[in-house]
View 1 (cartoon, one colour):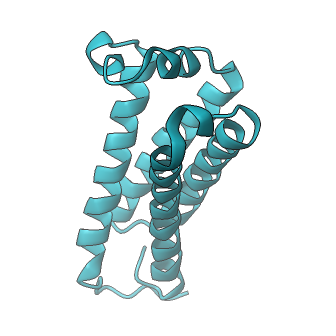
View 2: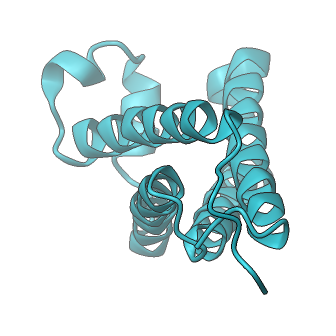
Length: 143
């Protein structure tokens, strides 16, 4: 496939939004996993107990979603054709975590509709970034 030397004008903006999204997700992950009290004070005691007792495989999957997604966003920012695979892995991993939290661990009872909207909206954003990168690669706009 031939790669166009001209990137669309939307690429820097979308890549910057993707990096920002994943940096926020990374901050959330790190602050939660490191148990930063000032951050955890933003949650109810029940929510803190819930977040700090996740199974290790969920924590690992959450980490994959955040860090691999961030790598994909950074690769998108420099126009790499490999970015869609990393964004796909991040999106799938975050989806698995959300399904576990809300489908099997009852997170809805702790977060209500706002939590579902936040998690679902975040996952939708991750999916959009992946689909954008995939389209750019298919159009020959990523190297």
